Amino acid sequence: MDNKKLESSLDYGLIEPLTIHERSKVPEALTEGCTEQEYDLYFRLKRESPDLLAWSKSCIQLYEKQLQDLDQTNLEDIDKYQILKGWLHVFQVTLENWVKACEGKQEERKNNECD
Image 1 (tube, one colour):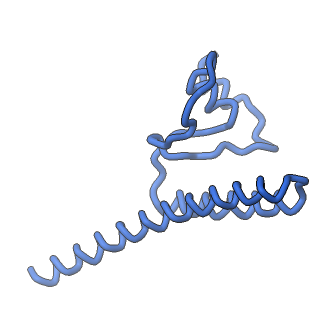
Image 2 (image 1 turned 90 degrees about the vertical axis):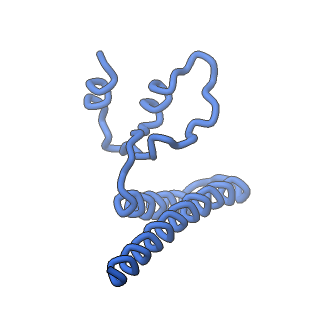
């Protein structure tokens, strides 16, 4: 069974796929005996290039779900801190991309006004 057929047969009632950028550094290093495809299938990762708005909405939705889960978990405070620190990095990268996109639009408008 190929990866797409296997993926479509999986039940996402509990675990929805997570879309990440195709150039994402996740995973940083694979363990021996595990291919990137197997890793992505196990963790329900979809490597695509979503547009910035879709990516941002996905981040907000996942963050809210994980925040609710953290309230109900018995993780140590340091583990919760590490998870939230990871989210801060995600949000920083996302905001940096929004700034670039907005600066590009401003420059485009300036160029159109000068024509």
